[in-house]
Image (cartoon, rainbow, N blue to C red; front, side, top):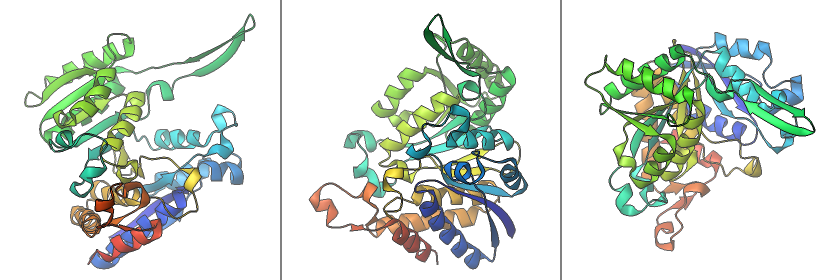
Length: 363
């Protein structure tokens, strides 16, 4: 198989973690006889410095014409004083909209080797943590009008949260289909006790539910969901929610699994060309120190093989290599045990060494 991958290294630790994911992909290509062609794309702070904007149109075109996009991370303190439309994160929003990647899939699954790294009590972790957050990605408050103005000497700011029933329907349908392939439980998360957008969300979800009589649908307010994720995450199978709620809840969910550095994600629309990235940020405070955890990016590459290229065996091979790496006791700093007894059975490794070791476990 010959596939063209647009690679956005981005800012901060982005180039470091992307390098390790490419190392693993190259090993997969050798093992299974594939060819992955990489095209570098500038986005985020690096694009602002080089081209004067967070994602030039020609760079977006490269992503759209590729078979898939592998993304590191964007952003950093260097660009925080720029006006809103010039921030690195605007490049990410433009990428999602331009590729019509409206569905973000973020798994929250604890690896058995890292059970002790979860901040939750042991008895909660032992019940199991294995759910997926399906997040709407191209609508809501992130894409609404943002305005700051001064009236009578007082500053006002507003951000519009707008959803059409069509936008709600398409993401909720993905939620139902995802639940259908798993344990047949779907939790719809909104804030219908306050927001009109959430009341429409809830109504549309229940209309679609009539087409899926085998799926157990529950409704949950977002504040309650945030509590339930730490109280009893085992109750969840698939969570479907709007853009901002999904952004917040998925970061919370990542931390109960031990480290945000372990969590991959996929963003897809109606086709197979998607955006694959770890859910963490650019971590500029540790950039260039070779201590970042690249596993979230490596697992994102595995998701790309599975969902965009249909290479399930190859994806499982990467996941097994990650598991073998953890079994062998290798740990980057973020997942290194704190207790001395556990530390004795683990080996601290760098970001680059992590990528090398995981690639070596692909045999």
